[in-house]
Structure formats: structure tokens, C-alpha cells
Length: 124
Image 1 (cartoon, rainbow, N blue to C red):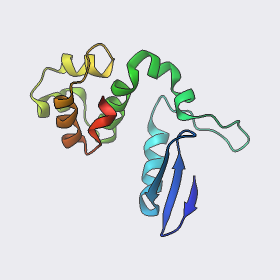
Image 2: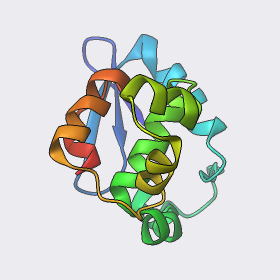
Image 3: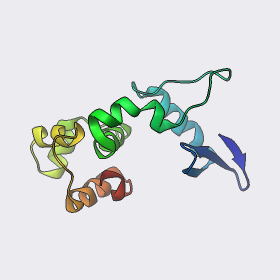
Image 4: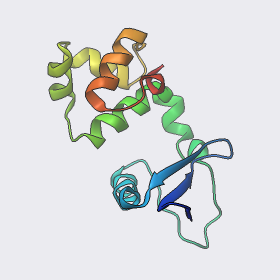
């Protein structure tokens, strides 16, 4: 993470993906990442690895759509039951989507995106 112009902070998750985050939201993002149980906080002397490498086991188990769904749900402070109720689906179906056992359709991805305020393409 380093500062860019116009009070923005650049965050690199992999060698291919860079994001500019408003400085006032950078601490919120760091706090969010710190609270994820599957994210390892690195010390400055640690070897840097990509987010994909760090989450490789979770991605292999849950898939990127499921992991994105779980992360977005947790970011919003919702339980599976609460999100399922907002979507008018069974909690079991949401659990299957998060665990990679049920694919997320484009229609469902757009519904999730609207509720979770995130780009629907992360769920596909």
C-alpha cells in the first residue's frame, strides 16, 4: 500500500490488480482485512505474497465466487440467515453458494451485488 495523488492509497492484491482507495477509507479496508479469519497479517520483514497465494486453499475449497460472497456478506455484518431473508431464498442455498457447492447465476449475482454494494462480476 502506498499513497498516490489526490488523497488516494494504492493497494495491490496481485501483480495484475491495483486499486486506488480514498485515503479516508484505507483504514476501514485495513480494519476489514485484519478481521478476516483467513487473512494472515504480514510483518514488514515477511516475504510478500499475492492475495491469491495467501488464500489459495480457501479459493480451492470455496472458489472465488463463494469466497467473494462470504467476504462481502461479512463486510456488511450480515449472517447467512439475514442475507438469505433479504434475497428471499433459503439459508441452505446461500451456504451452498458460499461453499462452492452451488453456482451463482448472473441474475443472483446482480441481486447480491445490489444488496452487498459490490460489483456483481465478483460472484461469477
